[in-house]
Amino acid sequence: MTTLENGSSTRELAGKRALVTGGSRGIGAAVVRQLLDAGAEVLTTARSATNTVPEGAAFVPADVRTRAGAEALAAAAREKLGGVDILVHNAGGARPHEGSSAIPDEEWQDALDLNYLASVRLDSLLAPEMRERRSGTIVHISSAAVLTPEVPPFLHYVAAKAALETYSRGLAAELAPFGVRVNAVAPGRVATPGGEATREQWAEVAERMGVAPDQSDGPTVPLGRDGHPDDIANAVLFLVSSRASWLTGRNLIVDGGEFPMG
Ligand code: NDP
Image (cartoon, rainbow, N blue to C red; front, side, top):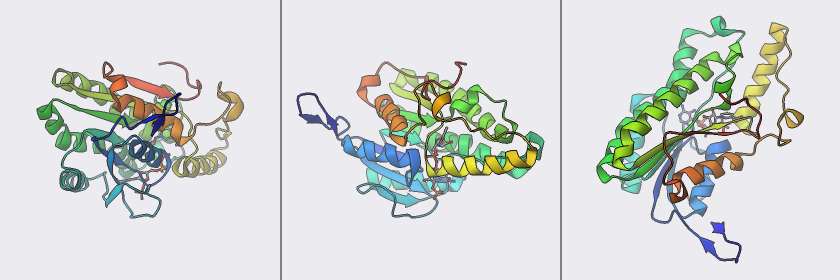
């Protein structure tokens, strides 16, 4: 719920139906919580059922990397919500390797499936209904790492997110004439379970490679700290609200000012 300066509050997304992927922890859970607070009805998914899904959200287990997972999720959204007004593609991530050529084929495919094709598949199932209704909004969670792809251990991840950003812009152009808005959010370094696990894996890989692991936090971020999941959720909530009604095809970088502009 948004509290106004005069003490009153607004549930500005009341009546909206939202689907968020990867809402059981980290950034996705923060997005789910903020959508619920703003009055939206929310369905979320992860591979495993978990008690960390924010209270008040409906949950359906699904693996978004597969066509079958996307179909099950779209069907659940129709059954439980009656349709989707707000679609947030948040599930994502990848494991680092000792350089780009050490990334096995199946992990390239996995990175593409999770960070890029999952959105393409689910959008292809749900965007036509938004287009038909002439309303709806989609947010793709990318990564500010797209701006600095010179980190070979993560090239599969960064390349997949770069594809996602280009796709997001193209889909926005396709759907704009129908009143459907599509945007991306690119987080910098955010403190989440997935983020921390990846950084631990990266420290191990960096040690094997004999290079310094990326220890950037605090002082290297102009705003002086790592991100909190709510910093990203704030941006998502803005983009899906009517406050952003003249905004589509954009990629909002939320990184405490750390990354160079592309
Ligand atoms: P977490 O790993 O903390 O959470 C990921 C969520 O997605 C979990 O709910 C997880 O549940 C779910 N998920 C993972 N794989 C699948 C799958 N195949 N199918 C369905 N659900 C899945 O991630 P973060 O919160 O750190 O990241 C969220 C997004 O933000 C990602 O797209 C990430 O790339 C991006 N990002 C994060 C940054 C960071 O520093 N944290 C920086 C830049 C971008 P389960 O494992 O049970 O499936």
